[in-house]
Image (cartoon, rainbow, N blue to C red; front, side, top):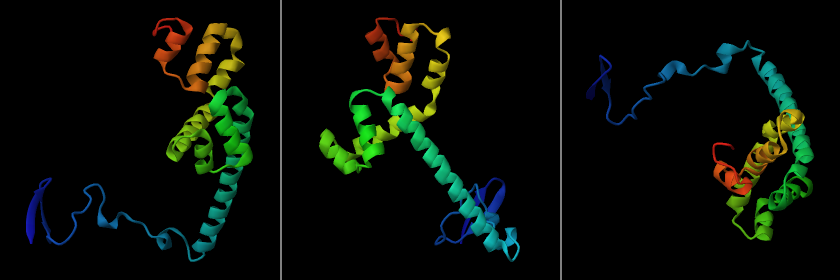
Length: 163
């Protein structure tokens, strides 16, 4: 037996045992049988089915949003997203066409999807009256294209702090 002093208490533990997580006790797991009544399994199944239907609907909504916002993209990003959304191409096939690694394609699609679903550029478009044309172009470069502030400043010939 090994004796260790931890937070004012003397803990005795077998050396063969794995050290316990100090943030969770052994009895912190709650069994399903304690939460639900004897018919709890059927309630759990209904909950899972309803949550699956809700997640499928939200997934369809996100895909529709992506399809409508793909036209904001340009060049390779638009081509990748069209291949991914419309044709259902695999990452490996898109990587072969683009001439890059499969992981790069997957990462790129993830980033583009996140930026398009964010909706910050859409709010800029809705409030066009408050922004000048150069400010809208800067917002597009930042929110849709994902350019860094430094590159945007160089491209628009403004200071970094103006971006």
